[in-house]
Length: 402
Image 1 (cartoon, one colour):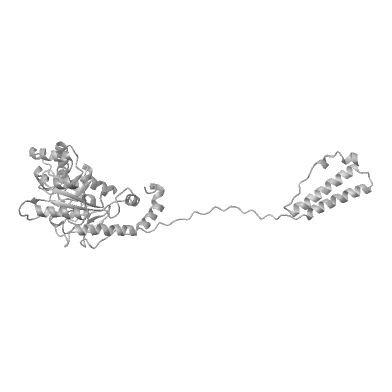
Image 2 (cartoon, one colour):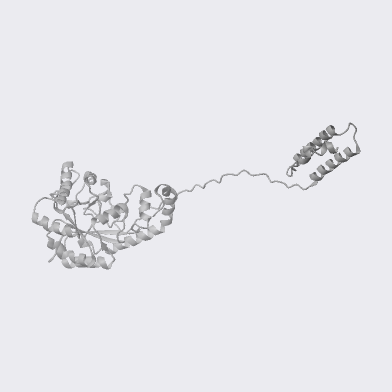
């Protein structure tokens, strides 16, 4: 037996125990017994001996002892189930801010077509804060004596300027207004823009507006008539333009024939384009705003203006102040403003902006200030809703808000 078993490779191999499955352990036992039986059959004599019986008995006892050991029960392995991404539903956006401080037919209109662009400009921290408001004041004449019609006296003019300053307003130029209305670029939260219509000598601006430029840095806009005559007037005004605080914009070419729905394309282009050419020639600048002569405009003229390079247009309609993506307009001629041409049919609020006459400015300073405050509170109350909408709908494409 020693010669048969002592050097057999079976005795140098340790067969691992199968701990985790009872059926496999039974199989392991049977295979072990079968191997022992095969070896014994090849090595043992034909008749069983006591030694053989002892070996078989020991093998069986060993196997049974292994089966009697406690077996760890393995829990079945669970297949990982991907976690479903929750679908976020964007909230409904709030309505445009409305106010009872405007006349009933003067309804604020929006003009930014892309909601995500609007929200991005509105809530970016480096832009103008919601509720930033602009009062556009139209000056026709400032008289040293008595004033009539749309003019004001020197004393009235001074009171307007002082009251605006005391109410926290700051004056801006035309480029600042355009950047604000198009992109919500920062301007003072209460801004005012002064537009003086028609041609004037330099004395007019030096007497009535330079003191406020010197004290507060306030610029003034002149809607200048573009007809190429009176080189003396052009020279004086070109000098003021070079100083930078009088900002010259277009007020028509021959000026005395207002544009209407019956105006031809040729007439519209000669009026709007001719004014550009003259200002470029004498003042070395290109105007971006058109002050409609006599307040007359048409749908066609509003369409042509931007193709010539105009970004803004001004009516003589005293609808109210303006804010980013918020411009008061009327759909029809109505009793609340019977002389005002309705702007909505023209289709572009940026080319049909309202203005307050200077003689009525004092009566509207508090109204403009209150509209700005109300709008700021309204937007703040709806801020979280708009930011959630932006995060769900806009951020994947437009990126996070700066």
